[in-house]
Length: 140
Image (cartoon, rainbow, N blue to C red; front, side, top):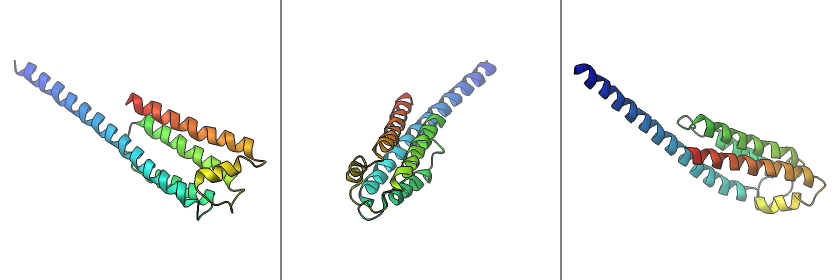
């Protein structure tokens, strides 16, 4: 009888630990997404006074500094891919250091340049990696 009670106790402890881990992971995902939302609003306006590349670099540095330690690996990896996609965009934005304005307006300006095809590829990668984040989030 003692063996059964001990085994049952271990199962309960294990279930509570797993539930606690899931709650931590969910909270981590929610925190990262809320912080990204805030940082994204800052990014969108920062390009009014700073180059788009500097704005993107500040944004991605801030994202890299967030605490992903309680997030599921799949989410952390997806977010890293999104950060990489933003950093890759600087291959284009570095060519336009004097453009200023709200980020989406600056993007619209770049779409009309000789770099429009490459720009659209990098922009698609940013959106594709965001879709991956959304899919991973829905699985957790």
